Image (cartoon, rainbow, N blue to C red; front, side, top):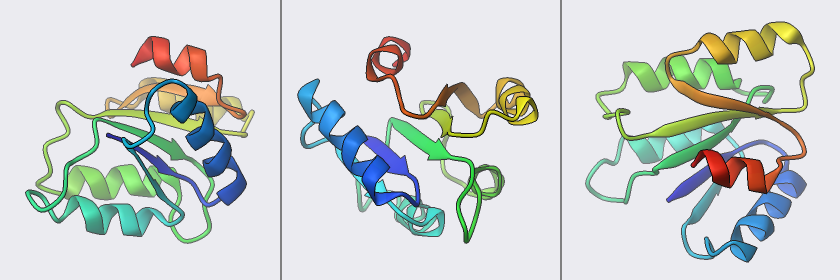
Length: 121
């Protein structure tokens, strides 16, 4: 299961279509608000947990970094979870912070290169 957490509906749609073309038609769930994704994660056992999260950095209610902090605070097991930061930010501080985060498996610039992503997964 792949979760897309991004406040841009058009971006979500394009990534969903790219994933569908690569065989992930029924294995994708999207969230416009990171808080909604956290609520779903708190429902452990009631829904299938994600294997992969594509997480935007800049979102209005909660940014990607805040989401990671709240995720770490949950009792949710993140050992088998692959989280990739995906952003249009070209700020070298964001890229370095992502590289140094123990919770992240990588950083991708938008638009997402689906082939590069699938090679990492």
